[in-house]
Image (cartoon, rainbow over all chains, first blue to last red; front, top):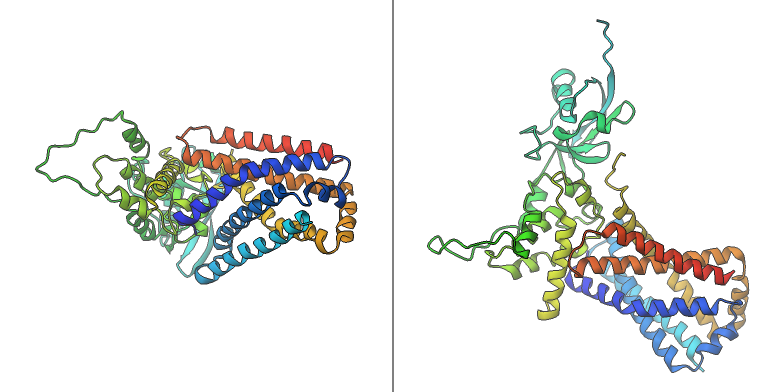
Length: 110
Length: 242
Length: 113
């Protein structure tokens, strides 16, 4: 259930996230060595403007991309359409933005 | 000669728009036999009320397309030996189209979508103008030629899971035809074509499963054409905002 | 080999892309929630990270990284097919995306255990 605009939004958010995913995985591969702890995570991210900007833009792109992706699946598998489908799409996006925002705040705020 | 005719278990779907079920027949196996031969034998010898379509029976018209053991095929060009599952065959009406009766489906949705995708030529000249010269080797014409041999048999439409899940989706055949017209230098409404394939049922819904290309009996590649439409609409969006 | 309308390589690529996308979308809220514990209940986050030392969790993490990489590289393959001039090597590219994903997620797993 994608017209041109949602398609462009989906593809652009995907392209945008490419480098973010690669950096995130590289950091995870580095961080997972020797086990993970809260202190280790926060030691890297807390108070960091860079990580704040990095992860907040990542969250925005991921929320948009996930919402559109789920929209397509829900339409094709469950047959939802029209107002209900749009409401669900927006809700998913906003919930992910909110939860993601909290997570970013949690690990970057001093 | 002893009568050692072998029989096959053939299940054929019987019913109409309200529903139906598979009916089993014992059909004599022959050395050289197509699925169309099997269906015809059943109608002539076992169940005269069986409804099915065929026309040329030589693989040119596409009328005989049906689901054979779950795969959409031209039944006149499908040898039984190639698809026989042990001793069993299952023949059903094409997927993704409403059933009229038994093996005959209503092709209207398929053709309505053909038109909705602007798969109609938009003339730019009159009969008084000189005939436009088309270079068959130009890259645009090569794109057209790659997809022009579609005979509207609907096999690609039946094989596509996106068609199954999204009733608005125009489908591989209609979009491929739109692409051939988009690349036709004689067509006067390129933007109209792009608009027609950019709606809720447009080319952007294609997930590139490729079942259309795998199953097209003419070896066409609608997935390639749809990728072309995505390219063209994206460029148009970046340049013009639509 | 009997061809069904589904059981061919590019269809599997589609199915994997959809499954990984769905999995990631369902994983994200949980991931965000766990991380937000750093703000309100850091001791719970610490407890979770300790629990995550369990080898089964490491296998699940491998699955997550694999899902992310296969979804991304599969997506890049799609965008290349859609926007670059057509080339007839889709199956090769799909296989390549799968291979790179295994490589990256395998590297993660080996570092994790």
